[in-house]
Picture (tube, helix red, strand yellow):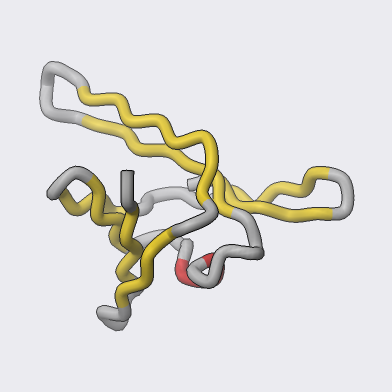
Length: 78
């Protein structure tokens, strides 16, 4: 499942090292897409609120990003 991130300036980059992808569609049209991304991914810095994720021919706006640490590594959860 390819993911493409678009920043606030229109720059597009593929997300290649994401993990734990979850997509939930709801009956009322609301949907959630969550994933974790690690600093090794070239698009890591593009993951921030209001960036756009292109997934399954749809555009989803990132509303929340949590930066977490696991041991001596950090990652983002969007």
